[in-house]
Length: 271
Image 1: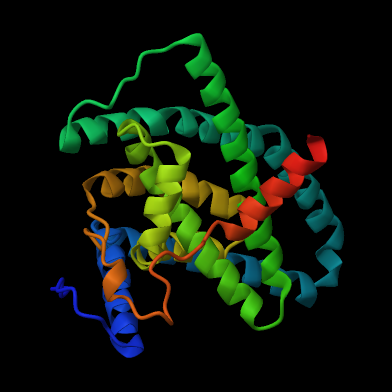
Image 2: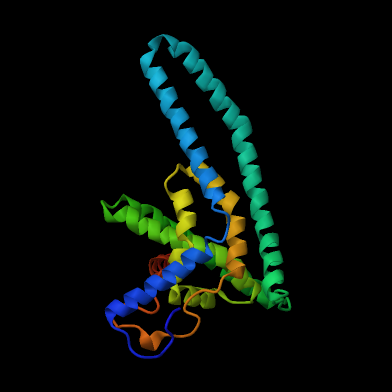
């Protein structure tokens, strides 16, 4: 159990406490059958083994270049006119179902979502907030993706930022159903940064190390599970422990600082 007394902690003790929060998030995001990971790993291994075998066969036998070229054209045509459209359609349908899944999970664990009365001014405010939110996360993903190119530390930083954004995506439905505004959601998230890094860790492992096309499919497959688990989770810390944290480790980590700065720049440019 996490100690909740209000005594000041040293840097080492604060780091240990953050590690406990990380593990709590990791456990909360691991509340689904481990056999799914085994199946996923098996499919990924088999697909890579097949590609490796095909590559070796092409190198070993130059005489089959023409049939291979024909097969490649047929395969690309099949993917272009059948696989990709079906994939995009399923992804759109999944996105439409995410909200229904989130609402149902919220009702099971917390009751009915908060419903505010719709007015013209409120509708305009929501539209403006959604535009700001969309640009904010676009900037966040831009930073998380481009930072990857830095030698050595780039992939590590990128991985951590994807852990956070996947966790945020999973919990945002719950927070919206509670009636929280964007600023409140971000503050809550940044104050529990260690927990959310742990919660998004397994999801990032599933999607970070594979190609973008397959990653999007895996995301669409597993995201509903994380929405459900987020509705059942209780992020740590569960009370304000700002006074306990060592000054060398921030209680609120500005995860969205870069994205917000980019947003401010864009607003300044267009204002």
